[in-house]
Image 1 (cartoon, rainbow, N blue to C red):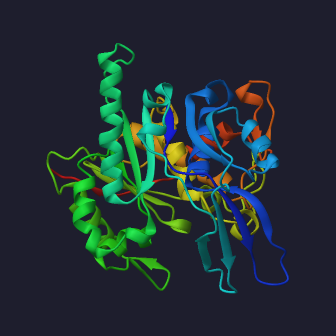
Image 2 (spheres, helix red, strand yellow; image 1 turned 120 degrees about the vertical axis):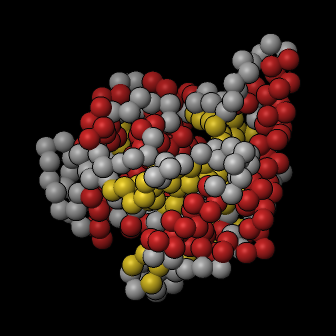
Length: 374
Protein backbone atom coordinates (compact mmCIF):
# COMPACT_ATOMS: atom_id res chain seq x y z
CA UNK A 1 0.00 0.00 0.00
CA UNK A 2 1.01 3.60 -0.54
CA UNK A 3 -0.82 5.30 2.33
CA UNK A 4 -2.46 4.31 5.61
CA UNK A 5 -4.00 6.62 8.18
CA UNK A 6 -4.47 5.77 11.84
CA UNK A 7 -6.80 8.73 12.35
CA UNK A 8 -10.53 8.15 12.84
CA UNK A 9 -13.74 8.46 10.92
CA UNK A 10 -16.30 10.63 12.71
CA UNK A 11 -19.96 11.16 11.81
CA UNK A 12 -20.65 14.87 12.25
CA UNK A 13 -23.85 16.70 13.07
CA UNK A 14 -23.30 20.36 12.18
CA UNK A 15 -25.47 23.20 13.46
CA UNK A 16 -25.28 26.74 12.08
CA UNK A 17 -26.73 30.05 13.19
CA UNK A 18 -30.43 30.49 12.41
CA UNK A 19 -31.93 30.42 9.78
CA UNK A 20 -29.51 27.97 8.12
CA UNK A 21 -30.60 24.36 8.53
CA UNK A 22 -28.27 21.81 10.17
CA UNK A 23 -26.28 19.19 8.28
CA UNK A 24 -26.67 15.75 9.84
CA UNK A 25 -24.81 12.44 9.40
CA UNK A 26 -21.92 14.10 7.59
CA UNK A 27 -18.84 11.97 6.85
CA UNK A 28 -15.94 13.59 8.68
CA UNK A 29 -12.95 13.06 10.94
CA UNK A 30 -9.22 13.46 10.34
CA UNK A 31 -8.93 9.92 8.99
CA UNK A 32 -11.71 10.35 6.42
CA UNK A 33 -10.31 13.63 5.13
CA UNK A 34 -6.74 12.28 4.97
CA UNK A 35 -8.01 9.34 2.91
CA UNK A 36 -9.90 11.78 0.70
CA UNK A 37 -6.70 13.73 0.02
CA UNK A 38 -4.74 10.60 -0.84
CA UNK A 39 -7.56 9.28 -3.01
CA UNK A 40 -7.85 12.54 -4.95
CA UNK A 41 -4.17 12.44 -5.89
CA UNK A 42 -3.77 8.74 -6.62
CA UNK A 43 -6.73 8.34 -8.98
CA UNK A 44 -8.88 5.22 -9.55
CA UNK A 45 -6.15 2.83 -10.65
CA UNK A 46 -4.30 3.00 -7.31
CA UNK A 47 -7.24 3.57 -4.99
CA UNK A 48 -6.77 0.13 -3.41
CA UNK A 49 -3.34 1.28 -2.20
CA UNK A 50 -5.00 3.56 0.36
CA UNK A 51 -5.78 1.89 3.68
CA UNK A 52 -7.83 2.90 6.71
CA UNK A 53 -9.90 1.41 9.49
CA UNK A 54 -13.50 2.18 10.44
CA UNK A 55 -15.24 0.97 13.58
CA UNK A 56 -18.77 0.54 12.32
CA UNK A 57 -21.27 1.01 15.13
CA UNK A 58 -24.90 -0.10 15.22
CA UNK A 59 -26.07 3.26 13.87
CA UNK A 60 -23.61 3.58 10.99
CA UNK A 61 -25.47 5.48 8.22
CA UNK A 62 -26.00 3.43 5.08
CA UNK A 63 -25.62 6.57 2.96
CA UNK A 64 -22.13 7.14 4.41
CA UNK A 65 -21.21 3.51 3.66
CA UNK A 66 -22.30 3.95 0.03
CA UNK A 67 -20.31 7.19 -0.19
CA UNK A 68 -17.13 5.48 1.08
CA UNK A 69 -17.64 2.59 -1.35
CA UNK A 70 -17.52 4.98 -4.31
CA UNK A 71 -13.90 5.81 -3.42
CA UNK A 72 -12.85 2.13 -3.81
CA UNK A 73 -10.16 2.31 -1.15
CA UNK A 74 -8.94 -0.57 1.03
CA UNK A 75 -11.15 0.14 4.01
CA UNK A 76 -11.09 -2.29 6.91
CA UNK A 77 -14.60 -2.16 8.39
CA UNK A 78 -14.69 -3.55 11.92
CA UNK A 79 -18.25 -4.11 13.11
CA UNK A 80 -18.91 -2.99 16.68
CA UNK A 81 -22.66 -3.64 17.02
CA UNK A 82 -22.74 -3.05 20.79
CA UNK A 83 -21.77 0.59 20.48
CA UNK A 84 -22.63 3.70 18.49
CA UNK A 85 -20.38 4.93 15.71
CA UNK A 86 -18.01 7.70 16.81
CA UNK A 87 -20.01 10.91 16.46
CA UNK A 88 -19.41 14.59 17.13
CA UNK A 89 -21.47 17.74 17.51
CA UNK A 90 -20.23 20.83 15.66
CA UNK A 91 -21.91 24.13 16.50
CA UNK A 92 -21.02 27.34 14.65
CA UNK A 93 -21.64 30.69 16.32
CA UNK A 94 -22.51 33.92 14.52
CA UNK A 95 -18.80 34.81 14.23
CA UNK A 96 -18.12 31.40 12.58
CA UNK A 97 -16.23 30.01 15.57
CA UNK A 98 -16.83 26.26 15.74
CA UNK A 99 -17.59 24.41 18.95
CA UNK A 100 -16.78 20.70 18.89
CA UNK A 101 -17.49 17.79 21.21
CA UNK A 102 -17.77 14.02 20.89
CA UNK A 103 -21.26 12.70 21.50
CA UNK A 104 -20.36 9.00 21.53
CA UNK A 105 -17.26 7.11 22.69
CA UNK A 106 -14.32 6.84 20.29
CA UNK A 107 -12.16 3.80 19.61
CA UNK A 108 -8.53 4.52 18.90
CA UNK A 109 -6.72 2.86 16.03
CA UNK A 110 -3.19 1.55 16.62
CA UNK A 111 -0.77 -0.94 15.13
CA UNK A 112 -2.75 -3.90 16.53
CA UNK A 113 -5.74 -2.81 14.42
CA UNK A 114 -3.87 -2.80 11.11
CA UNK A 115 -3.95 -5.66 8.62
CA UNK A 116 -0.70 -7.15 7.30
CA UNK A 117 -1.21 -5.26 4.06
CA UNK A 118 -1.67 -1.98 5.93
CA UNK A 119 1.42 -2.58 8.07
CA UNK A 120 3.45 -2.86 4.87
CA UNK A 121 2.43 0.62 3.70
CA UNK A 122 4.90 3.11 2.25
CA UNK A 123 3.56 6.00 4.38
CA UNK A 124 1.55 6.45 7.57
CA UNK A 125 -0.48 9.40 8.83
CA UNK A 126 -1.28 10.22 12.47
CA UNK A 127 -3.35 12.94 14.14
CA UNK A 128 -2.53 12.68 17.82
CA UNK A 129 -0.49 13.90 20.79
CA UNK A 130 3.34 13.82 20.74
CA UNK A 131 3.55 10.85 23.12
CA UNK A 132 0.96 8.84 21.22
CA UNK A 133 2.81 9.63 17.99
CA UNK A 134 5.97 8.07 19.44
CA UNK A 135 4.04 5.02 20.62
CA UNK A 136 2.46 4.52 17.20
CA UNK A 137 5.77 4.75 15.34
CA UNK A 138 7.41 2.28 17.72
CA UNK A 139 4.44 -0.07 17.49
CA UNK A 140 4.30 -0.03 13.70
CA UNK A 141 8.04 -0.56 13.34
CA UNK A 142 7.91 -3.48 15.78
CA UNK A 143 5.07 -5.12 13.85
CA UNK A 144 6.91 -4.57 10.58
CA UNK A 145 10.02 -6.17 12.05
CA UNK A 146 7.96 -9.24 12.93
CA UNK A 147 6.73 -9.45 9.32
CA UNK A 148 10.29 -9.07 8.03
CA UNK A 149 11.50 -11.97 10.15
CA UNK A 150 8.72 -14.12 8.70
CA UNK A 151 9.70 -13.14 5.17
CA UNK A 152 6.38 -11.33 4.66
CA UNK A 153 7.79 -7.83 4.22
CA UNK A 154 10.84 -6.29 2.57
CA UNK A 155 12.71 -4.26 5.17
CA UNK A 156 12.17 -0.69 3.98
CA UNK A 157 11.81 2.48 5.98
CA UNK A 158 8.26 3.90 5.83
CA UNK A 159 7.39 7.60 5.83
CA UNK A 160 5.65 8.98 8.93
CA UNK A 161 3.55 12.16 8.69
CA UNK A 162 2.22 13.61 11.93
CA UNK A 163 -0.25 16.39 12.70
CA UNK A 164 -0.51 17.35 16.38
CA UNK A 165 -4.00 17.50 17.90
CA UNK A 166 -4.99 21.07 18.90
CA UNK A 167 -5.81 20.33 22.55
CA UNK A 168 -2.23 19.30 23.32
CA UNK A 169 -0.45 22.05 21.41
CA UNK A 170 0.52 23.76 24.65
CA UNK A 171 3.84 24.90 26.17
CA UNK A 172 3.94 21.99 28.63
CA UNK A 173 4.01 19.60 25.62
CA UNK A 174 6.96 21.32 23.92
CA UNK A 175 9.56 18.87 25.21
CA UNK A 176 7.36 16.03 23.99
CA UNK A 177 7.17 17.71 20.59
CA UNK A 178 10.96 17.84 20.45
CA UNK A 179 11.08 14.14 21.33
CA UNK A 180 8.43 13.18 18.77
CA UNK A 181 10.36 14.74 15.88
CA UNK A 182 13.04 12.11 16.41
CA UNK A 183 10.54 9.55 15.10
CA UNK A 184 8.65 11.20 12.23
CA UNK A 185 9.66 12.44 8.78
CA UNK A 186 7.23 15.34 8.65
CA UNK A 187 5.28 17.35 11.21
CA UNK A 188 2.43 19.63 10.16
CA UNK A 189 0.70 21.87 12.69
CA UNK A 190 -1.43 24.78 11.59
CA UNK A 191 -0.33 28.33 12.34
CA UNK A 192 -2.23 28.61 15.63
CA UNK A 193 -1.17 25.16 16.85
CA UNK A 194 2.51 25.82 16.21
CA UNK A 195 2.31 29.12 18.05
CA UNK A 196 0.48 27.52 20.97
CA UNK A 197 3.40 25.15 21.64
CA UNK A 198 5.58 28.23 22.23
CA UNK A 199 2.97 30.53 23.74
CA UNK A 200 3.25 32.76 20.65
CA UNK A 201 1.00 34.30 18.04
CA UNK A 202 2.32 34.65 14.51
CA UNK A 203 -0.50 36.72 13.04
CA UNK A 204 -1.93 40.13 13.82
CA UNK A 205 -4.04 42.59 11.82
CA UNK A 206 -4.19 40.21 8.89
CA UNK A 207 -0.41 39.79 8.56
CA UNK A 208 1.98 36.99 9.48
CA UNK A 209 5.25 37.65 11.29
CA UNK A 210 7.29 35.58 8.85
CA UNK A 211 10.62 36.18 10.55
CA UNK A 212 9.32 34.86 13.87
CA UNK A 213 7.57 31.94 12.17
CA UNK A 214 10.70 30.92 10.26
CA UNK A 215 12.77 31.20 13.42
CA UNK A 216 10.50 28.77 15.26
CA UNK A 217 10.39 26.32 12.33
CA UNK A 218 14.18 26.28 12.05
CA UNK A 219 14.54 25.82 15.81
CA UNK A 220 12.45 22.65 15.54
CA UNK A 221 14.02 21.38 12.33
CA UNK A 222 17.59 21.74 13.63
CA UNK A 223 16.87 20.81 17.27
CA UNK A 224 18.33 17.32 16.99
CA UNK A 225 21.01 16.63 14.35
CA UNK A 226 20.11 12.94 14.51
CA UNK A 227 16.34 13.50 14.27
CA UNK A 228 14.41 11.74 11.56
CA UNK A 229 12.51 14.94 10.74
CA UNK A 230 13.06 16.15 7.17
CA UNK A 231 10.50 18.93 6.87
CA UNK A 232 7.92 21.06 8.64
CA UNK A 233 4.77 22.15 6.87
CA UNK A 234 2.79 24.91 8.55
CA UNK A 235 -0.80 25.03 7.27
CA UNK A 236 -1.84 28.68 7.23
CA UNK A 237 -5.44 28.80 6.01
CA UNK A 238 -6.08 31.52 3.44
CA UNK A 239 -2.37 32.36 3.40
CA UNK A 240 -1.52 28.89 2.10
CA UNK A 241 1.27 26.76 3.55
CA UNK A 242 4.90 27.21 4.49
CA UNK A 243 7.17 24.28 3.58
CA UNK A 244 10.51 24.23 5.41
CA UNK A 245 13.25 21.67 4.81
CA UNK A 246 16.97 21.64 5.57
CA UNK A 247 17.74 23.82 2.55
CA UNK A 248 15.00 26.40 2.25
CA UNK A 249 11.49 27.56 3.04
CA UNK A 250 8.82 28.12 0.41
CA UNK A 251 5.33 29.63 0.53
CA UNK A 252 2.59 27.98 -1.54
CA UNK A 253 -0.69 29.81 -2.12
CA UNK A 254 -4.07 28.10 -1.69
CA UNK A 255 -5.49 26.99 -5.03
CA UNK A 256 -8.61 29.13 -4.93
CA UNK A 257 -6.59 32.19 -3.94
CA UNK A 258 -3.99 31.66 -6.67
CA UNK A 259 -6.61 31.60 -9.42
CA UNK A 260 -9.03 34.10 -7.95
CA UNK A 261 -11.36 35.22 -10.71
CA UNK A 262 -9.43 33.45 -13.48
CA UNK A 263 -11.29 31.40 -16.10
CA UNK A 264 -9.70 28.66 -18.21
CA UNK A 265 -11.01 26.07 -20.64
CA UNK A 266 -10.02 23.23 -18.32
CA UNK A 267 -11.32 24.55 -15.02
CA UNK A 268 -14.41 26.22 -13.76
CA UNK A 269 -14.13 29.85 -12.77
CA UNK A 270 -12.78 30.13 -9.24
CA UNK A 271 -14.83 33.31 -8.79
CA UNK A 272 -14.32 34.63 -5.27
CA UNK A 273 -13.18 32.89 -2.13
CA UNK A 274 -16.58 33.35 -0.54
CA UNK A 275 -18.21 31.51 -3.45
CA UNK A 276 -15.74 28.62 -3.69
CA UNK A 277 -14.64 28.06 -0.10
CA UNK A 278 -17.74 26.79 1.66
CA UNK A 279 -16.30 24.98 4.69
CA UNK A 280 -12.59 24.66 5.59
CA UNK A 281 -13.21 21.67 7.89
CA UNK A 282 -10.84 18.81 7.03
CA UNK A 283 -8.73 20.79 4.56
CA UNK A 284 -5.56 20.28 6.59
CA UNK A 285 -6.14 16.54 6.86
CA UNK A 286 -6.82 16.32 3.12
CA UNK A 287 -3.62 18.27 2.50
CA UNK A 288 -1.58 15.67 4.40
CA UNK A 289 -3.18 12.74 2.60
CA UNK A 290 -2.46 14.37 -0.74
CA UNK A 291 1.07 15.25 0.40
CA UNK A 292 1.91 11.66 1.38
CA UNK A 293 0.56 10.30 -1.90
CA UNK A 294 2.41 12.97 -3.86
CA UNK A 295 5.75 11.98 -2.32
CA UNK A 296 5.81 8.86 -4.46
CA UNK A 297 5.33 10.76 -7.71
CA UNK A 298 7.98 12.16 -10.03
CA UNK A 299 7.96 15.97 -10.06
CA UNK A 300 6.20 17.48 -13.06
CA UNK A 301 8.80 19.05 -15.34
CA UNK A 302 6.97 22.36 -15.26
CA UNK A 303 7.67 22.65 -11.52
CA UNK A 304 11.36 23.11 -12.28
CA UNK A 305 10.72 26.73 -13.28
CA UNK A 306 9.01 27.62 -10.00
CA UNK A 307 10.79 29.96 -7.58
CA UNK A 308 11.45 27.30 -4.98
CA UNK A 309 14.66 26.07 -3.42
CA UNK A 310 13.09 23.18 -1.49
CA UNK A 311 13.69 19.65 -2.67
CA UNK A 312 11.65 18.82 -5.80
CA UNK A 313 9.92 15.81 -4.26
CA UNK A 314 8.67 17.92 -1.33
CA UNK A 315 7.46 20.64 -3.68
CA UNK A 316 5.55 18.09 -5.75
CA UNK A 317 4.00 16.59 -2.62
CA UNK A 318 3.09 20.01 -1.21
CA UNK A 319 1.33 21.03 -4.40
CA UNK A 320 -0.56 17.73 -4.48
CA UNK A 321 -1.62 18.44 -0.90
CA UNK A 322 -2.71 21.97 -1.84
CA UNK A 323 -4.92 20.65 -4.63
CA UNK A 324 -6.40 17.97 -2.37
CA UNK A 325 -7.32 20.66 0.15
CA UNK A 326 -8.93 22.74 -2.60
CA UNK A 327 -11.55 20.04 -3.18
CA UNK A 328 -12.17 19.55 0.54
CA UNK A 329 -13.26 23.15 1.12
CA UNK A 330 -15.83 23.39 -1.67
CA UNK A 331 -18.74 21.95 0.32
CA UNK A 332 -19.87 20.76 3.71
CA UNK A 333 -18.52 17.20 3.96
CA UNK A 334 -16.91 15.44 1.02
CA UNK A 335 -16.72 16.33 -2.69
CA UNK A 336 -18.80 14.32 -5.13
CA UNK A 337 -17.03 11.80 -7.35
CA UNK A 338 -18.18 10.92 -10.85
CA UNK A 339 -17.56 7.28 -11.75
CA UNK A 340 -14.88 6.96 -14.42
CA UNK A 341 -14.87 3.18 -14.93
CA UNK A 342 -11.24 3.17 -13.77
CA UNK A 343 -10.05 5.75 -16.29
CA UNK A 344 -8.11 8.52 -14.47
CA UNK A 345 -8.60 11.07 -17.25
CA UNK A 346 -12.37 10.75 -16.93
CA UNK A 347 -12.63 10.80 -13.13
CA UNK A 348 -14.16 14.03 -11.85
CA UNK A 349 -14.59 15.41 -8.34
CA UNK A 350 -17.06 18.28 -8.08
CA UNK A 351 -17.03 18.18 -11.90
CA UNK A 352 -13.30 18.94 -12.06
CA UNK A 353 -10.33 16.73 -12.89
CA UNK A 354 -7.74 16.60 -10.10
CA UNK A 355 -4.72 16.39 -12.39
CA UNK A 356 -5.96 19.27 -14.51
CA UNK A 357 -5.77 21.33 -11.33
CA UNK A 358 -2.34 20.02 -10.41
CA UNK A 359 -0.97 20.76 -13.91
CA UNK A 360 -2.59 24.17 -13.93
CA UNK A 361 -1.21 24.96 -10.50
CA UNK A 362 2.30 24.29 -11.81
CA UNK A 363 2.09 27.70 -13.46
CA UNK A 364 1.47 29.38 -10.10
CA UNK A 365 4.29 31.38 -8.56
CA UNK A 366 5.54 29.88 -5.32
CA UNK A 367 7.92 31.99 -3.35
CA UNK A 368 11.16 31.05 -1.59
CA UNK A 369 11.32 32.97 1.69
CA UNK A 370 14.55 31.53 3.11
CA UNK A 371 17.54 29.67 1.70
CA UNK A 372 20.22 28.07 3.84
CA UNK A 373 23.51 29.70 2.85
CA UNK A 374 25.71 27.06 4.50
